[in-house]
Length: 420
Image (tube, rainbow, N blue to C red):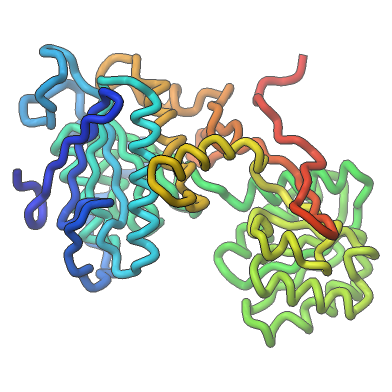
C-alpha cells in the first residue's frame, strides 16, 4: 500500500483477538527497520484556516470503500478507526523513543478494551509542519474518526484546520492551551491544574501571603498567570512574584527578593537541578522550608526532588502515585521497560475512545460526549475536558519527607460529582 509521502508499511497485529493497523512513513515502531531520521522541518505549511465555529466543509459522515478495513471484521460493520499521529522519525532520538512508548501504551489500551471493532492507524508526525500535515491527511484518507496526538503544539496548529474541515476531533498531548479549542482537546498534564490545586490547598491550611519563583519561559507564563488568579480567588495576596532565567547563575537574586518579601508560602515553578539550587538559596536567605511553606507543581514529581533535604516539608500537586502502579506493572511486563511519564496519556486516550465507541459511526465523538461534565477515570485519576479544549484533572497533594518517598496528605478526588 502507498499512502502520502514515501512508502507506508502496513502491519496487522493479532493479539488478544484485537486488531491493530499500524501505518508509518518509513519506520515500524518497535520493529527492526529504522530509516535515517529526516532533518528537522520547522516550516509550517500554509493550510486553509477555518474561523472558530465554522461548520466542516468535508465531514466524514459514513463508511467508504476507500477507508481501511481489515479482513476479519464482520461484513457491514463500520470499525472505529482511531488515528494516532506521533513523531516516529523525529530528529531527536529521545523523541522517537517517546513516540514508540506512546504507541505501545495505545496498543496496550486497545488490547485491554477487548473491543474487536477498534482499529489503530498510526502515521508519522516527524518534525512537524509538512510531516504532520501529510500524516494527518493519510489518517483521514483511511477513515479515522478521531486523531490521538500529535505531541507538539506546532504540529497541532498545522493539522487542526484539516481535521476541523472533516469534523474529526483531535486529542493531543501538547500542554499549550493556545492550540486548544474548536475540536482540539488537550489530554496532558497542564500546569494550570497543578497551580490551582496546590495554592487552594495551601490557602485552606491558613497560608495567605504568597510569593512565587517562576522561570522566564512559556511554562512560567502559564504558572504565573494561574498563580495570581488563584491566590486572589482563594482569599490570599501575592506579596512577590519573581521571574528568573533558567540558569544556575540567575536564581540567587530572585530567590533573595522572594525571601525578603516575607511570605508564608512560596510557589517554586521549577524542577530538576535548578529546583534544588533555588531551595538552597532560599534557605541561605532565611526562607528555608522550616520557616516558609514551599509549594510546587508536577515538576517536583521526581526522585531527586523527593530526596532533597532543603525541600523537606514542601507540598506539591501531582497525580496520586498509587493509581498508576497497575499500569506501570502491565507496561513493564509487556514491553520490558518502565513506561515514560507520558505513556499513561496514550493509554487513557484510547481507553476514552473505547468508552465512547458504542455510538453511531462518525457521530460517536461529539463535543457533548467528549466534554461530559462527569468526566472519565484514567490511569492517573479522574479527568474531564472543558469546552475550551483544556483538561481538568483530579490531583493529590503530596509532601516531601526528610527521608523516604513523598506521602499523600490530601487525596485526589475520585469523581467530579458534587459530594452528597
